[in-house]
Amino acid sequence: MTTNLQTATLAGGCFWCLEAVFDEVKGVHFVESGYAGGQMDNPTYHAVCNGDTGHAEVVQVKFDPGVVSFRDLLNVFFAIHDPTTMNRQGADVGTQYRSAIFYHGDEQKITAENLIKELNAQKIWDSPIVTEVIKLDKFYVAEDYHQEYFANNPYQPYCQAVVAPKVSKFRKHFLEMLKKQPA
Image (cartoon, rainbow, N blue to C red; front, side, top):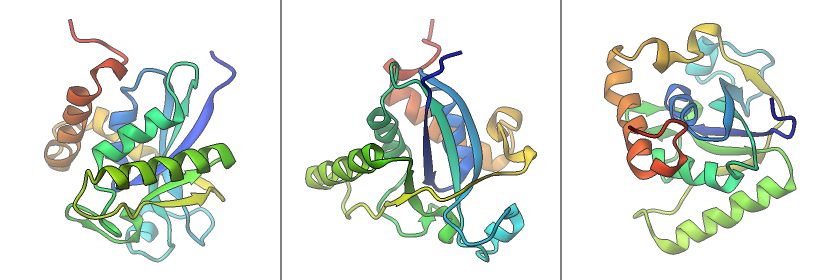
């Protein structure tokens, strides 16, 4: 296994969506769903969903920067969720669904802030990006049943309606970044 792996921690709505997409990115070795950005130690899914903790649903992505850059991961991140809506993604509403980049060092912070400026200048969206760029304090792993949720529950209605289209969008727009190339 590669020893120079780096970590990215990203919040873009439901963690099931982000995990399903980043699992397919070439250079990503591991993706784990969890919680970050709140005030409670060891939050539970129930407490986070109630909005009691201030945490966001996040994924922690372990990646090889020799294969995929942090900036490339952010380009995927911005393409698969709406970074212009405060505390919501589609029908999912609440601070736990906010858009955020929890950086692991100054280089990640600068990369994220610069990319946001570039994307805003390109006016890709009708509204400005509201993605927070915050230093990661603590990451808490989500309950076991949230890990690889889409892979384990592809026919669950939420997965069919919300997760699957995001995975398809990634596959369509980032073909060169797929771990497995289509035959």
